[in-house]
Image: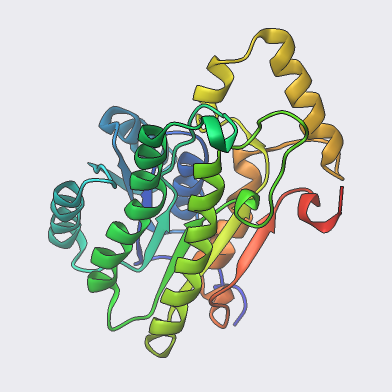
Length: 268
């Protein structure tokens, strides 16, 4: 009875931000366990590349464009999903951005609005429509939050933007509320709070503002603060994604799991 706990044959999974980094790893992992994965991204070419990687490994996948911050784009996307699959079993709200990092009194309102539109409003828009294809259940929604939404961090120099931390704290609150609303329909809603994972495009704007010496100092500062002594990579999250998406976690909902090498376990 336990050999099929993680299998997802016959299930349709939607992964936003699937064109690169964490989203690509999530899509590949779900496909490896039998799901048909719809690779959703604002950059369709990157989503199609993820699709090719999956189908090249004998998995099932398709690629669709979506801008999660745009209501019309989200509606068009879900209409296309409905034509393809008629329902959605798994939704991973992974799409997100970070901006250049400044202290709060220096931070630009335009950057706040741009980030919130994708990181928080986008999760709402995608979930709102996705639930309509997931009801009457069961289903699994996995929201990608961050350890930045669990506690503040200021090592004497800006390392996290106030908008990013706030948006991820909002994702955690959103996760718990939706979990409570849909538990009776067996639609499980959980969040993962990754730590400082490398191999993603998330910090591109921050890295672009740093000189080489500053970047090396930043990387050392982060590694020294992580109890395990190193940053994770995107594929390190694959096992947790498969667990939360599959029936193996059928009694888990409303939870936030930090995946951070022990970052949140210590006081520093």
